[in-house]
Image 1 (cartoon, rainbow, N blue to C red):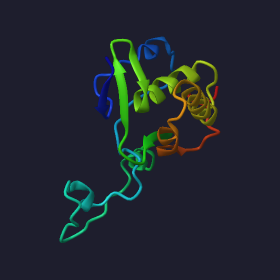
Image 2 (cartoon, one colour; image 1 turned 135 degrees about the vertical axis):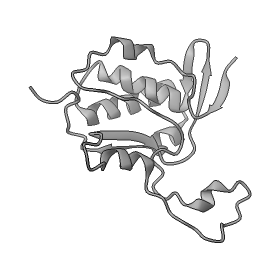
Image 3 (cartoon, one colour; image 1 turned 90 degrees about the vertical axis):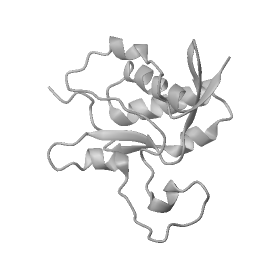
Length: 150
């Protein structure tokens, strides 16, 4: 039975155990991490605007722009992301795209090529779900080599 989850808590990506990384590598993913227009009204469930509307910086971009050695890049959802998962793993949505990202990393270590490979694999494995492909963005230089240069 496939369960629909908001975010991707509880999804294991066993492929991470097989990645040899020369650098400290962190993987976090959840819905709205790359929402570019987040404001306090988004916190209300009834759709009524807040009396004072404060805007917040994009969470994913704050990792990259950190002044004391931020991330080289982030991938995140610009809108609420869902996933379908069961005992066999993710089948669609954020979970499948994340798994596809790490599988694509096995083929190349150029960031943009990894992201494009993940999108292509996702399109082939979850036909008809163009929303997930459209909502996830890469923030960072797509020409970067993951792990650095020798």
